[in-house]
Length: 124
Image (tube, rainbow, N blue to C red):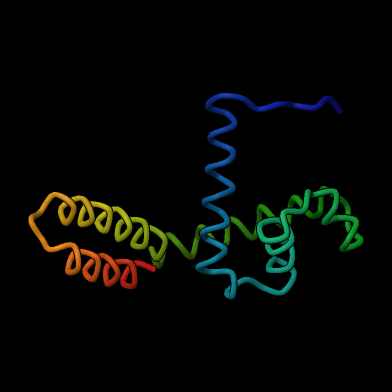
């Protein structure tokens, strides 16, 4: 099988898809069944390739790929119903907006830093 090197938008799209799936896993991973959770953890946390996961679990690469996609679909379904990741991203966007306002406002540095720390705690 030839090696495919992703460049430009294709690479960015793939990276964004993996990052989004990792974020979904962070929020909803505990809702997956044991085998889905294991595959997601090995792929997204341990950063193993599909072949490495297949070897570790004694499965075919195709089975690992299928289980990974099935788990990602389940995570996406949870997000569609609960919207926790979307809310988190929006809160982070609003926090950045607040940081900009604080930086441009005439607020004593000591108070500005306290406000920023509180905003960071809220958006963690």
